[in-house]
Structures are given as structure tokens and as C-alpha cells.
Amino acid sequence: MDQHFRSARSALEVAVLGTGALAEEVVRIFRHTVDDLSERAGTRLTLGAVSGADLLVDATATTASSTTVLAALRAGRSVVTANTELIAEHGHRLASAAEEYGADLCFEAAVGGGVPVVRPLTQSLSGDRVRQVLGVFPLDGANPVAQAAILATMAFHTRVEVADVHFEEFGAADPHALAAAEALSLRLRQLTVCTRVSEQSGPEDGGKEQISVRVHPALIPAAHPLAQVDAPAVTVEADCAGQLMFSGRHAPRATASALLGDLVTAARNRVNGGRAPRASYYAELPVAPLGDTPTRFYLNLHVTDHAGALARVASTFADHGVSIERVRQEHHNDAAHLIVLTHRARESALTDTVDALTDASCVRAVRTRWRVEGADG
Image (cartoon, rainbow, N blue to C red; front, side, top):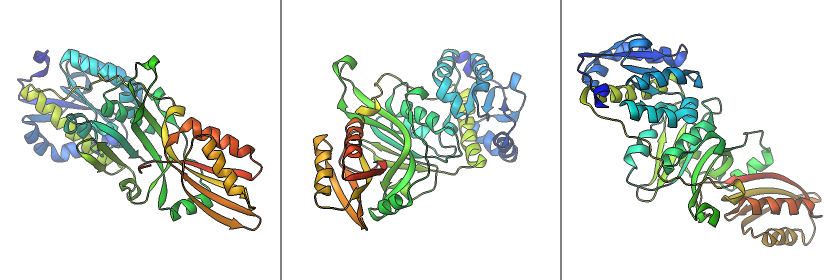
């Protein structure tokens, strides 16, 4: 419905939805740079009321804005949003409305604030095959589960819901386990993991490739880009492009920058009759159960310090099909710590191994269990 989309007006009215720090920052920057923004958009931009605006900037943080956003799209008015919860919960419905009524729905700022990762996934890498997306986001920032659902949806051309994302809190870490991990050149992060599962699913799923979407504490190599920066940051691995990294700032100003970038794009499309890229869900890849997801693991075991203990532990791993890559042993009086790094194994196999170790007479405690991501097995 291009008649809704192309604008013959000499100016476009912009409304900002929200009353918090982000909305205030968007308005401040807009007023300060409106001449430049208008030149880039190809038409004069002015601030106006939500009810009659041509373009809506959603600077809210909850799904309460869904009714207003949906009404704007159904009126053929483009929307740019930083609302992570809104896109994760209602993005598919809003995108359908934008398609039907000839409007744009842009949400670069909804993932990582000022981290420019949405456009690369939906545009720059649209001719490639994304294998994995890893992200580190502020613990006090937008809902990491919602961000993971959005990233996986875009990366794998599959509708991923918030309920599909496995989540574990980032709790207090054992100082000894942290020090032992550092000695192995591994660092702990609260990591967002969106990855293809190379193993094929069963006949009941039609033999399709699966994906895994998780947010949990994980160790990554100290040399990995995500170990070198403060949040927020995202790495994307694709078949042809290789590993790409995107990082930014966790601040209203950075998020406002991303919103205004989308605003210029949406305004330019209104002027020229263009359209923003549509989300695609053609792949329909199933989300793998956590137990079927393969990864590497780090275990810190407290064992009795006597002959045969290490052999017993190694035998338990082998009995459950979990291959050990490396073992480090530290002695403390009549006990010892075994630091075990495994090769890739299914989560269910590792869980069975830990259960068996807990029952073993030579194991006093399984003190720490962390996944290891961002490294070859």
C-alpha cells in the first residue's frame, strides 16, 4: 500500500513516545541536530504530537506501548523503537501490520542499545549463513532473554519466542574456580548464546537442523573478543564472512543515536517510497532441548587425595560418553581439586556424569560447573 507510504508533504512530523531518560535524550539530540537530520532524510523534520505524527519514535521500555505502536502502523505511520520487550513479545504481529499497511518497523536500538547488530544481520549478512551469535550485555540493561530471542530470530530466519530461551542467573562465583579458570586463560561472562546445533534432530522433527538459544554464565577464552571488552558487545560467525564483532555503549545517548539512525532511514523511505527490509521466518528451525545441546564444560571437583581417585573420575566421564580434553590437579592437605575441561558433549551426558561423580566415594563435591563457549572443541 504505497499510497500510505510515500509522502508528498514538504515536512514530516515526528513524535517521541515515552517520558524517561531515553525519550529526553532523543528529543535533546533531535532539537540540536534537526537541520542535519532533515538533510539526511531529504525532508524537513519537525516534532509533533503522537496522534498526528508521520513517524513515531518509541522510547518506552515495556509492552504497554504495543497498542499505540500497532495503531500507528495500521495508520501507515512508520515506527522506530528501542523497546526490547515489545519486539520480543509482539514483533511478529507488529511486523505483519507494518507489511500490510505499508509502514516501516525499525528496531536497531532494541538489541544492545547503541550496538549496530540488527542491520548487519538483516541486511549485510542476508547473503550468508550465520552459524553463531554470542553477546555480552549489561546485567542492569534490557531483558537479556528478550534480546536473545530477537537475535536468534534474525540470525536463523526462525520465529524464536522468549519462552524458547533457556536462562540461568549470574550468581556469585567461587573465587578458587575463577582463579583456576584464569590460569587456563578462561574468563567468566554472562553470555548470550544463539547457535546452530550441527547434530540433526530426530524423525519426529523431520530431520531438520536445530538451534540453541541460551543466556547463562559461561567461560570464554581470554583471547576471544568478548573477553576483552566491557558490555555491550556481540560477535557473529558466518560461513563466508567469518567472525565479526560489534560493540557500543550502555547509555541513553548511545541508544538515542541508534533510534535517530532508524528515524532517518524511515523518513527517507517515506520521501522516496522505499521500504525497510522485512524479517524472514522461512527456515522454521526447531529449538533443541537443552539436554540435546552440545557444548564444552569446565568442572571443579573436590576429591580425596589418594591413589586411584583420578582414574576413577576419568572412568566416570568415559562411561557417560564425555571426553576429557584437559585435567589440572591441585593438592590441599588430604584433598585435591581437579579442574576438568571436556570436549563437546551433550548437556544430558554431562548431567549424568555429574550425578555419577556426586555418588562416587572419591568425590567430596562438584564445586563448579560452567559451560565453555567461543572455543573449538
